[in-house]
Length: 334
Image (cartoon, helix red, strand yellow):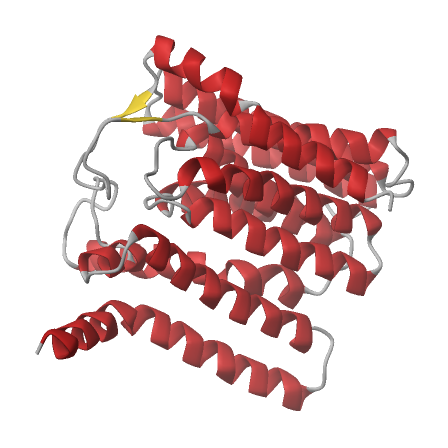
């Protein structure tokens, strides 16, 4: 029952704080104006992800204060600092804006500091620091790129959070159970605010929070000895969408950093799916691949081979899904 307390704190904070915070954002003029990348057509309040960040941080803090996490407390403390720093950076980006170089440089700094602290706490080699820094900075940007339709980031936080919590149970890492459950609860509480009409957006503070909380948790768990399949498979669909889109744009000679609508999830809405349908399809593939990782981690080569083949099929279907949906809808109209 002890886990229920931090989970409830995270959920209620994320659910209730927007009532007070949205009027403040409206007065400050923190809004999202549609551009070439946007899947919405009207000006929308952004930055509500700050309340999700508060939920995550309060939930993790409660897990420490209540004694639910009695071992490896330093890992949770480092994770709190990484999440807080990334969320603050995202808020600054929402409110004032930063250049690409400054933004990425600060993301790398957060990754370096966080991974260094984790390596020190776990007695791991500092050779992992550049890897962890790139993972954290990289996934912050992946989460930011993928935050383009209503519900997609909230559902991703819920799905990966639950998968990581299960990973913690399987690997007997109580801190990982707490981290995953709190992340899932906080992002679940944001969904009522974002789904449907999409009256508010998380903004960069929310996508930076999402990327840092998932990547920071994954780096800490990897250094703690958790199977890499448990940690990598839940984020494979997001990585696949981002990097195939990036490679395709570079191959075509396009400015890869310019706003666009070429991600798979965006092309799904162009093919006729609603925001919720597109986000749900991404999440369904994420859960299918992530659950496969839970089965293959530490298993025999035969199970691993079968799981890898299944993941390849899901990945291929995901990449082809915009064309499949377009053909199905054309056939239905005919």
